[in-house]
Image (cartoon, one colour):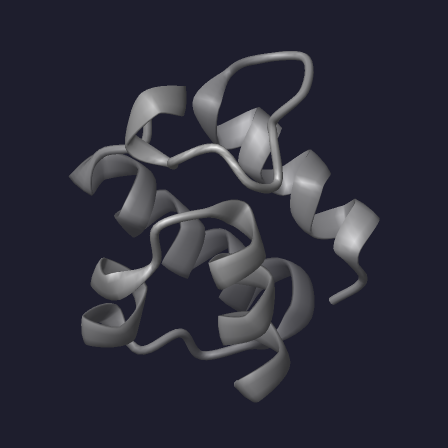
Length: 71
């Protein structure tokens, strides 16, 4: 998944126009429901299996991108 696609996905999940790559996910409204949505959407859109434990450790969109790149 390309970074722009990831940014768009995160914005859709958070129901905002844009997200910050470096600001805390929590400060942007990320919660456990967002985690579930991200896991499902990453699988559907890119065929990527996201590890829930690793996702729980993600603090920023940059962390999400690194997680996607490892998957």
